Amino acid sequence: MSIRLETSKRNGVTNFQDSELSRFQHHGCKMLLQQHPQARQRTQACPVYNCHGLTFACRRTKVLYRKDIDLILNDDGYREVSLEDVLPGDVVIYFSAEGDPNHSGIVVEMEDTLHVPRICSKWGYAGEFVHVLHDVPNLYGPRHKFFRCEL
Image 1: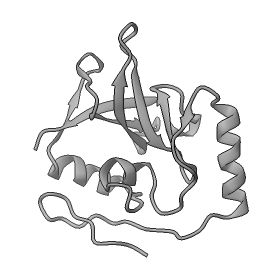
Image 2: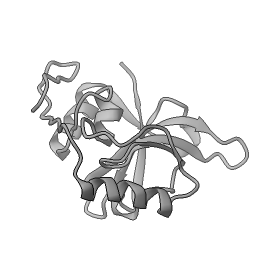
Image 3: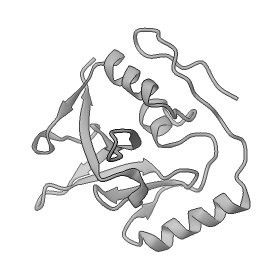
Image 4: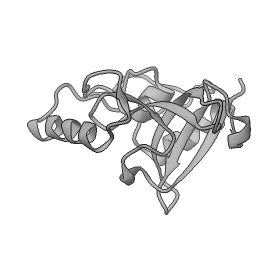
């Protein structure tokens, strides 16, 4: 199932919604909690949206494809910002070594002493987590970039 989702320039964004979680997915959620004890779980597991759906679609659906993430960034006026300039409300995207946008989240706080962003992101089918920048599952990738919407 999908919903009507568009960029600010009225270009359609491919998206999907699931309605239930499998036992395997529930087990994976529990494993994430054990592997990342410093991350704070904010919500329970949910099949409806993913990290990009949280970041770019108000928790309504899953956005999966690189072309759609690129379209959203371009059409909605996002520009890259440096770590030094990051503010709450900015977006972080984690990239694979090949450059695929595997994960995203929203900056909710900047820690004063070390200037490390605290992020709210959704970990796959698991719930939303509040975590420091690098405390994410390894599969999300080794690189990240920050973006700010300037519409």
